[in-house]
Each structure stands twice: as C-alpha cells, then as structure tokens.
Length: 296
Ligand SMILES: [Zn+2]
Image 1 (cartoon, rainbow, N blue to C red):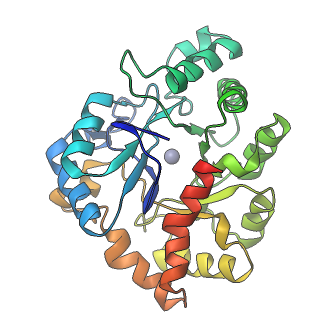
Image 2: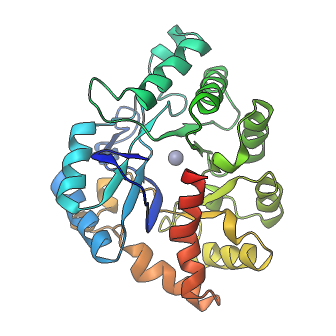
C-alpha cells in the first residue's frame, strides 16, 4: 500500500488512528491545531524507539491535512505514515460537501486514492475519518454514500468517527447496505462507549472496533478499556480490535506536559498484561489486525 513516501508492503506494528497534522481550531481552541512539528517529532521518535513501524493518519479534507509536513515527519522519525482522503463531520465539512453531488464527492476521493493528493504524487491509502454527529446529518450521509462508492471502486479501507462511540451500529449497517465489505471497515472511538453487548453486535458484522482514544481518561478510565479488550478477546473477538491514541491536541504531546503517544507502550500495554493478555495477543492487536484490515 501507499505511504506518504511511496509503496510499502508491510505495515508492522501500527497505530490505526492518529493525526500528525490537524487543525480544528476554528471551532475549538488553538490547542486543537497540531502545528508544532518539532514537538510531534519527539513523540514520533519515542514511538519508533518503542518498536512502532507505521502510523495511520486519518486527517482528511478540511481537517488541516498537510502532506508536505507529514512527509517530513515520516522521513525524520523513520515511521511509515499512511495518508487518508475523505471528510470528517459537521461542522468541519468544507463547503464542497454541500456543493458537489455524491458522485462528484466520490470522484474527489477516488482521485486522491488513485492519482494523488493536492497535486502531489502522495496517494491516500484509506478513507477516514468519516464521521457522524449525535445523529447522522444530511451532509454526513452524503459523505458516507460517496465514501461507500469510492471504497467499492478502490477497495481501500474505511475508518469512521463516532461521536462518543454512538451511532456505530447505524454506521456499519449503512456501509453494508451500500455494499462495502465490512472486513475493510473500522468503526472508530468504540472505547468511548463501553458496552459489551453493543461491541459484539457491531463486531458480528465482520468489521473492526477501534479502541483508539487510549489515554483520554477524562472520558473513560484506561483500566476499563483494557478490561473490555480482554473480555472481547476471551469471547473470540481478538481479531476485531485495533489500537490507537487519537492525539489531536498540542497539550497531549510530551513536550507540552501531556501523556504523549508512547503512553500506549509505557502505561496501557502493561494494563493489558495485567488483564491476562500475552505478548502474542498484543502483537495480534498491533501487527496482525492492521495488516489484515489493509491487505486482505
Ligand atoms: Zn475522531
């Protein structure tokens, strides 16, 4: 598949939902603009030292995606970085989502996947993160329809954003009804809605569950995330889980006093071991599952 520096054949140890650049500051504070690349690089170097090979960047059109900076960060850190196409959610959807038809939106995504992003040769290797609000808005539905169409044409994976883990069932149903192969889909931010029955109903479609806000303990304690992962694994859903941190704020980065991306290895994975997972189990979550999602 395509990384921002060219074709790679192996993902290796992978974080499935991150943002090397993002700018949501128009609706939030300046903290939500990841524009300090030196601070980001320090976090990425710590990930590399912890054994990470690849970071999937789910920043898309209208979210402050910056291919040139992503390339630099990839080169400097030695990490593979995978770029996305797509549109986020209301109110972050750029005006073109309203202006263009579903077919035209599909064509925009397809072009970024097949030809390249914003005049560069860098190709998007997935559609993400496409999101829903508390309820799916009309514009969000338009994006989901276009994304489904682009997915069918290109077979790239889709990564969704749910708001606090809600609407996950609606999302997977929508995509399956629109003939997307569920094995190519991750329903995101599931760890913000700790409900085992809900997890299983979604996973039974054959898609992945994103436990991708690890470290955001103001929403859910990480001990609960670890416990729920162990429980899903013991019920046979160990192949359905992907891990990440979804760091989107400068204040999350180490240099700003935050927990930093390396928190996943320093703090969270030990919690998984406490829940009885083995190192093979952890490899399944970080290596095997991302690889299957992308390459099958
Ligand atoms: Zn998100």
